[in-house]
Length: 383
Image (cartoon, rainbow, N blue to C red):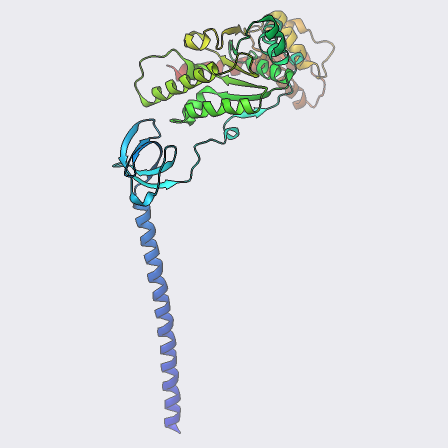
């Protein structure tokens, strides 16, 4: 009897030991597998990054010309595992020797609409005040050729391919461009020159080309290039890779403008605050040769702009518009709009729907203070 009990106890101990041993072996196996995976992951993280390059020319299956992201070109070797490579393919190369490691399925084309603003504006000429002469000139140069191209054929003249709007910030350059796009029912494609250079190093010229291709597909269309001076400033001796990139982008812009048919239904509008630094090449006949100044509004223009932005506001009858207009001397159109908005906020804060003269006075002072702060920041930036 005792022997039987001892045997059962021993069997139980052996079973528990075997079970525990098996469980520990399984855990040990899982831990080893996890450690191996972590080691592989660490080794992968330690590998140097590969560069994305474009194949420019192929000499033979083992030697090609590649273009780096900064625009430089090199003759390099090709790994046999890459397979057949042709000009235009995108590849990965190691950073040390630039040898091609792998071909990758990346298209050379941008999804342009992710990088530019494409819209059909609904701004009318009546929404713009104080720029009657400029509106008339833009209508003659941009609107008329888009609406009545046959008229120019009959007369036998070629309208300008584009115009340049210049003047201080906030004076209505973008509004004018959007208004002419709306009046001609054109696609409005907006790009900012400074972003074009900063965001797309090595790709600026290619992006410009594809923007113009999009404009032709969406014609009639207007390409609006804000801050055009950032890519079209007077060319100096090209030194750094950044300067070379700006130069390539500018030359591509000129080539695209030159490539337009005289009576094409794509127009280019450039805008700048710094006409004095622009390269004369962009303003020569056949390019952006119609130059239109958009000045800071005078007294009558300020009144016109003020009436546009305050027409929907509930104004107190005692408001003296002349006094308000006089207090806004030197204000741009954007600042006059800001005054109307701020005056509305002052009324809301006092639980009123009617805007009083004191609301406008406070709003004018606030906009003036903000302008002073911005001026100080600007001076601080440029020393």
